[in-house]
Image (cartoon, rainbow over all chains, first blue to last red; front, side):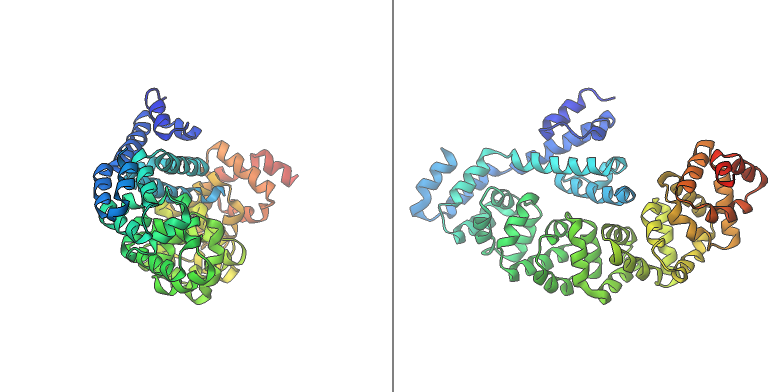
Length: 72
Length: 369
């Protein structure tokens, strides 16, 4: 029965998983939690650089307000 | 629906794998869980990935509101790329997201669609120009992105579907149908397809190795449409039908196939009963085991009655070898469904030990008394 991996998955899911999922063996719970964490990291990847790039495409007149929103 | 769980779980597992950027084979263990739990896990995955995002995404979304849609589109394409653009679109109000999407190249939009928050799709689809929706859908089919198609297709209006269906291949129709997020919409889509296209789609199942997808689609529709799919499949050439049965035997999908066979008229059912695969002891033994687990005796016995005698003997012997608990469950189910008339010819084919075990069952004693 699972111990450390279930709280880890619950944290990554931001919710307790369904009962049958919660009863999966530890390595499978770990795999799901790791996959969630890795996907979240991939989604955040390059965000800062993308914001810098985005700013370059904003017309001059709007650049000031856009910069303040992006990098306040 | 319990007897669809296996294929439904397979689709759900593929969807979770897609959300997590994982190989579906590594998540195969999810396929053995209750279908509702796997669906809930998918919904939780969507919620946690899309509701808990870095603050910078909200800032970018807020900033794009200050610039014209054309500039926001340029930012999406040149600075953000498909994944981040989709994430930003998910933070915008659907009308604003639709305004920006309309200014992007279709290929970029199609790629972005795969990363959109699935919960935002209905609001966005509702506001996009139909011509664009058609082009995006065709592009998704060309990219082989059937999971994303499955998220969209249930939200498309009839007129858009009527334009899209002729432009996508039969295999895409089956794959997107298998992945559909809103199975309640599948009947509407099949009705729009018309009988000839439906026949072509079912005919493509063998060539494209898509019988599980076809079975899943049949399982998600009801009434006449399900019966029509069953009949179309049963009237395929014998070699194709045999291929279907072998796929079902290999993958343990009897609980999806037997309810369809039960919908056939006697002539079509006979075409199934004489298949070469249904003479093989392993295949027949697998059916008996599956029927014991699922209780689909009413679906199976009419087919069993039409099998060649040697096949019926194999079925009878397999039933006669069931463990006590399984045999008792069989008898109770047969009694409940009043199927003794179909069972007795099989009992007659059993060896003496098997017959004796059946005759000693309380359920049999009750019915013969």
